Length: 191
Picture 1 (spheres, rainbow, N blue to C red):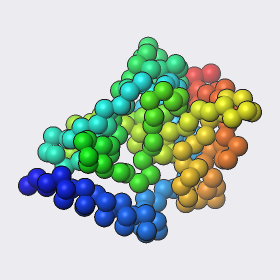
Picture 2: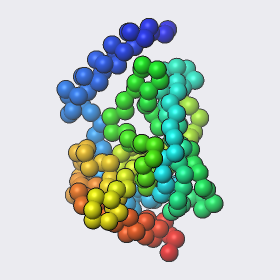
Picture 3: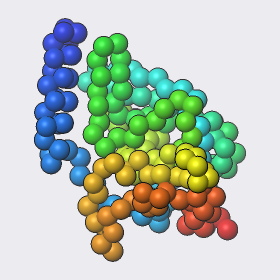
């Protein structure tokens, strides 16, 4: 059954309104340190988003978005990769938008460090994705104190990890980009 565009927009608006009004029922994430993120993912890349493309999945039940990244450095995984494409749940097709609470927000032209793993998304074949949602995306910015990496999880309350830490790696100060890259390389066993 396909919904008319008007009904689909109305349903999407109601869902987003409900989620915004009820943040306690939104996605709950347990803090992951760099060690866990590096260990649990098959690839970690530093690069720039070149473009994104959203589309309906095979059975037209979920919007998916392919993200194409120009790779500056592979910190874990296929060292020869110069470009990589991965898939996220959610996106916009026409006037229908699917929003995944806690999902990474990636913008073409922006630079990131991304933790990627192969997963089955919404019944589709296994694809590379940011499996740790916002915790698997570090945005690179220069806010006057040099280039720093900030976890997208900063804007999302995390539950404490086993050590009692609830702030994402780098916290509000972020991490110097070179420091973050060095730590990940060491954790991945590339010294």
